[in-house]
Every structure is written in structure tokens, then in C-alpha cells.
Image (tube, rainbow, N blue to C red; front, side, top):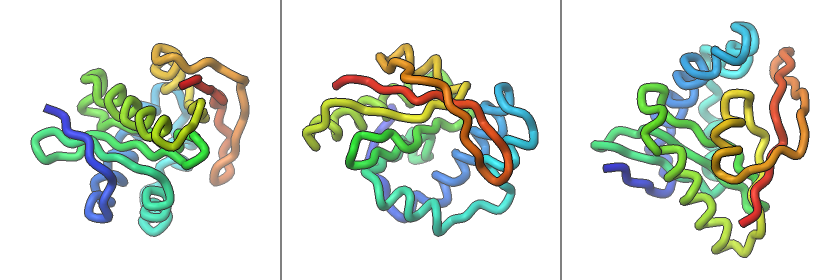
Length: 154
């Protein structure tokens, strides 16, 4: 059973762990080691993550009391993050988190969601109704990354 709850500050360590491990275990098939190190450095910035999660409408997915995924939605409909623990990929957790974000977006009166999807996340987004607006190259900690601006009508 997967339960989705609003993010709480007590979730921070688990959120950062999920992000770090998932980028390193899953996204590594689409990005090189230097990009992965820039994306998920060994010393996470916990204050930045705390702000990111609390500044957005954020959710955590739990299974048997363990955090297994999280998502954060900005008030303008930007899906800032959506990650699922690398050990729980393909179990429907991301779909549940996205549905919860869509529900929240509708409550906010939004007509669309948009995101910058990684190479890894693009197929998931397309399968759930997002369409690609365009490719883009972004820079993070001296590394360049290809990703995709995508949107979905609500």
C-alpha cells in the first residue's frame, strides 16, 4: 500500500537520500559520471533542499512507513521534482505522485503542468500526457545537461 502525504520537515533526510541514490543508480544510464556528480554531489545542500520542498506544494510517497518517492509542484504549475527510490522503479509510485500534483494544480485553478524532464524521465512524462515543447541544454556546477521542456494540459 502506497500512501501520499504532504511533505514535512521530518521527511528531509529521506527525500535527499532518494534523490541522491536515484540519480546515481537510474539517471547514470543517460548521463556521464561527471554530470551525475554535478547533479547529485556527495555533500548535499540540505538547507537548499529544505527550502525547495517547503517553498513548493510537496508530497512524499510512503510504503510500509518508508519514503519511496517525492514530488514538488510550484504554484504556477511547474513540476519541480518527481523522484522515486531506485529500488521501487516501475511500481506506480511516480504515477501516484503525479496524479496528486495534478489534483493540487486543479485546486489551484491551473490549466497546465510543465516541467524540464531529464532524458530518463521523458518517456514517463510522454506516457502520461506531457508533450515536448523543445530540447534545451542547461548548466549545473560546470556540466551541461540535455533535457526537455514539456507540458501537459489539465
